[in-house]
Length: 305
Length: 305
Image (cartoon, rainbow over all chains, first blue to last red; front, top):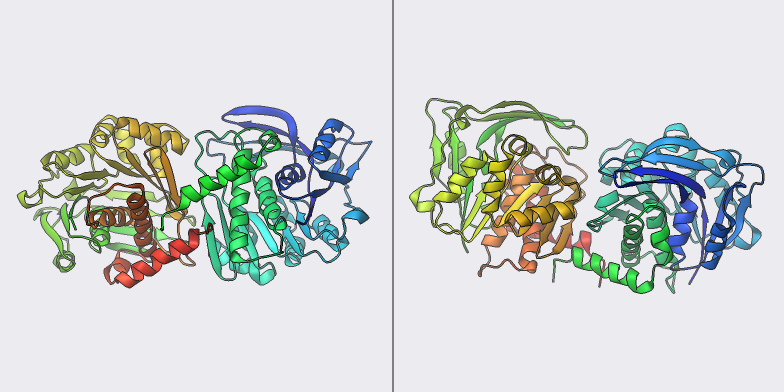
């Protein structure tokens, strides 16, 4: 059993979907990732919050064994706040407002106690911040990175530089197309692999996820759920399940078998997050529930005896 | 081994995709379905063509063991001609022109020799025409129906009536949402099953297909292909593989195992069609190629030992 460092946001989200509204609830990539991965291994957070961030929420992370020594508390400033809305397809959020607040001048400092952690997840942040966190780590075994359209549009070169130092890119389908300027996802994954990461994981929303590595493809569909309320955080929850499963292995392995199962566990975790607003579905989750849902994925996809 | 009656169009298609243009090539749902299903079982076509339809094309169907006694030749009229264009996502065609021509007053007559055929596929046509073909059949064992947005918008009641007499609905994802006025596909499939068909197969383009029956879900992803040129006919090719596989079983079965494999063989066949314009990929196809691709689907989706 290993552990994971995650750098990402801790935020307030204001979300509107056709199935409800959630004003100023807790969110952010570091929260979703950490709560998801913490079901598998210890997680260490690097992030920043403002004076308005609830102390009991930090306490809640601690109670799940999540190390928050790397979470910077800015006494003079407000927490990052994102507002977005989704249509019926819940496929892509329309950003209504982004208040960077304390995130604006954030310089991530990785605590000394984190630096030898073998697994690193560089959540969606400015590429230079992602690179700076990675530079502070001591020879990690496995580094994965995520990003979004905002950085692809504004800082593509710095982003490709950051990606080039990682083992895996975990990215939305629309965003890998945008990043590689290639529509076909097989070709897009090949392009990323030329830049460095030999493992490319494409998040496809309700259509699940695809994994490209060693010239092989693996695709797992999303679980058809009769009720989906809010996809916010599903991608980071997925990354948490994926990395958490990899890090939980007794022996470090990037074999096809291990990577494929990790992708499925990513989908398992994400399938809980989308059932309600915020990350409350992740909190009380029991191992039996995760395993039961894993078996639903087996059942959903099996056809060959 | 059984056989299948298909009613559908035989057409000229003029197609434009970002990967090329194909002016006035042969197409139509009956052609794609029959050429696909004929790799599994004998197929009997009910359709109509005009004086401009090439005789050698009818010959070609015959050479593949396809019965064309039910294809009406209108000496005074032109063949149905559809023109459409696709964007980079190849997900949905934009219809540029529809010249119904001989299809306009087509009254499908099922030859006496066809009427006891156990499998029936009611391809995308006016719902009344679909119902009329079904009414001419003698107690078929398995009837599947397809449709499109045009009929959902204009003749929803007649369409639901036609669907209610079928065992299976095979339909695009966007169209089942439109038909059932329900966004969630689990709920949409439930609604269709209340109308009659206990088997609902949802075609999801590059995301593969989903099967709902007996309260169970099965999803197979599409095969990631490095080159896709034209998705026209993929849905009918899918239906041909699905029905062809079902009809090819020694014993009639709608078991989970058989239905799931049928869905995969549908995706196998469709994966050939999208590789080029028209149905030429289906013509020379050998059993080894189909089986090789089936094994690619097994490999693509396997994760649980």
